[in-house]
Image 1 (cartoon, rainbow, N blue to C red):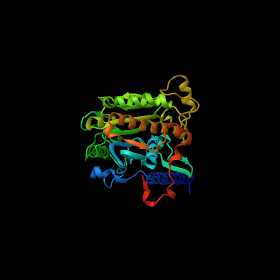
Image 2: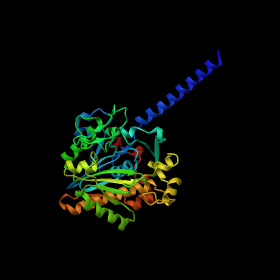
Image 3: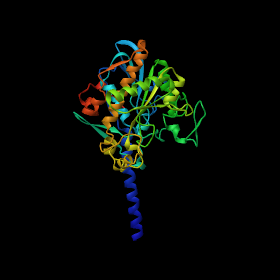
Image 4: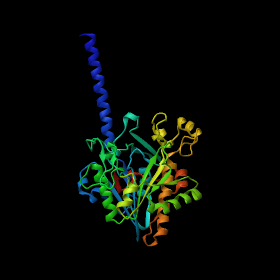
Length: 387
């Protein structure tokens, strides 16, 4: 047996071994289910496919939680993980699902809006497959997702994505981005089916307020803000001013661009009566000039390169040695959402949305995110849902 033949065989075996190991890891990640406990405020759980039958049986179908108040009022839709690499969104949505009590009106929550992206990953950028949030009863494990739906679920990508119905030309990747495919089509590409279903939900349920939760880089100017069209500007401005004055965190307002199509804060406002709000909290993990993309960076938001850039005034948010911890991001989202409900209720008292038992910014920062999660091992089986 020649030395050359032995080396070739060894290389082949190493290649097969690495391929099998990585394949198993990606398979397990795609099929890992995150348990969510329906809190006492949840009155029913349906599927997004109930609003667009073409989603039924696909990976894009996802849970929709209803929290209906004892008194009539307005309706709010809260949806998270439009971009699944911005996990403060799903962590915030889960706090509402497991804790919120609706006193007036109805709250509808979709914790994993782009379910395909939540089962996708980005190994080329060194993304971790999972992360854990500490709780009083142990660690709660979540998948780390990606910005776009998996090509396993929607393929092939076009050379150029032609947005419907505007026909604006967008990047080919945007066809898998559920913040570029609004208002969607019943039988378009899979992600257009998702946004079409959400638009149908908004119209059929007569939703007054729609809130899309996100995160953005510290080097991106549209971060730490509320993005709204003109018709929601007054409410957003009051929320921003009161958050700064009463809770001490910065959160400015950005106008929704009329000429950029496909975004939730643009199309929901244009194609329905609902007032749309898109929330951005800083996520240093997504910035390019950072160290390794570790779980610690994801959760703590501390990075020496960003700290250096901050001292050079290259960032669009305050940044010091404390970084941008997850509890600050989630706490900020909770407070902004609650303030949107309050300001909307002042504007439309006959359509009031009153929600209690959800922590405000200072409480989440003090207690941590996991403090508000219920232990699935202690919950009744019929109260547990998976995403």
